[in-house]
Image (cartoon, rainbow, N blue to C red; front, side, top):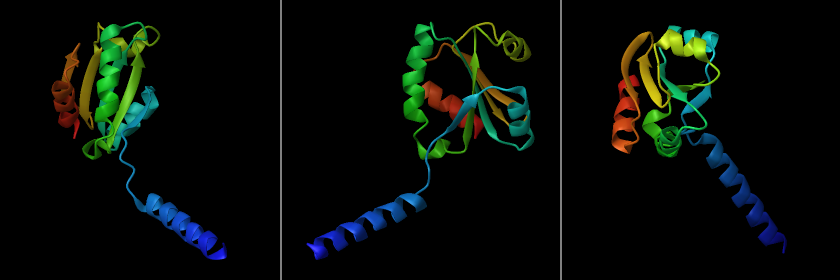
Amino acid sequence: MIVLSRRILIATAACGLLASVMPAWATERQPYTEAAFLAAQKAGRSIVVEVHAPWCPICAKQKVVMEQLEKKPEFDKLLIFAVDFDTQKDVLKKFRVTRQSTYISFTGTDEMQRSTGITDPMSLEALLQTAL
């Protein structure tokens, strides 16, 4: 019994160590704030601004696709700022956005691409690539 417990302890410790050194392949996502966006631009980050609405069926489709894309290791340096279409009208004006389901990619301060209403996984992935 002691030998079995010792083996379990060693296996558990090894798994914990392995998990701690594996890369965290996940895209960073946060609500949009002007301060955080400007800091990310100043740092030269790869940024995507996502304009969404909870009632939008296209946004719901995009969310499913984006959840899968964000798990890909090539997007681990990507920072996504979520903008609420209904409550952040000042941000919509700043980015000249008139519709929900809009994505805008940036590399630092340079806008790379924008798109509205796309739900195709390959098209969304291509848009994310433009920020890298």
